[in-house]
Image (cartoon, rainbow, N blue to C red; front, top):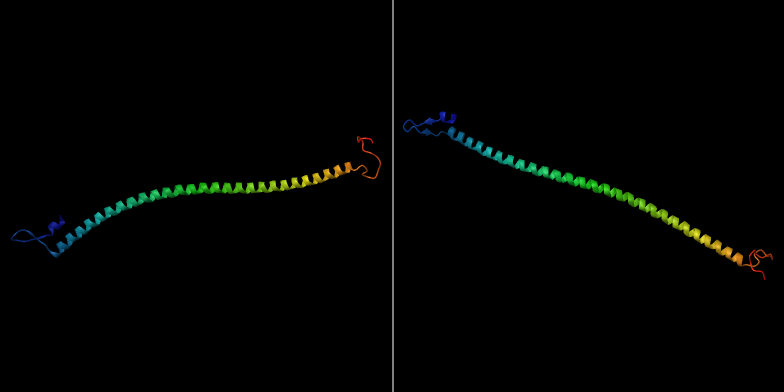
Length: 134
């Protein structure tokens, strides 16, 4: 409306006479309208990008929670593996001791068996109790 007040009119026709200042003013108004349109589009893009960002953040948080859970599970499994390795090591040591004890016991039994089979173990003529008389 202010633009219409500042217009110069032709006296004979009553039509406004375009001036350079008026043309520039109208061009500026068009630019402002264009910028407003760009601003609206830009705000829409920002809104869309913000929604995508929120979605990506949620996905990232979910993935981090899953990573944390898997890390905790892995740590537990690693600890259990260490426990199993120690158990196996102790079992192997126990087996080795049992094997050695068995070999020692077998040697003692064989010695005793041979000793009782020898009719004269110490060179004595005494027979063992319960052995058959000849």
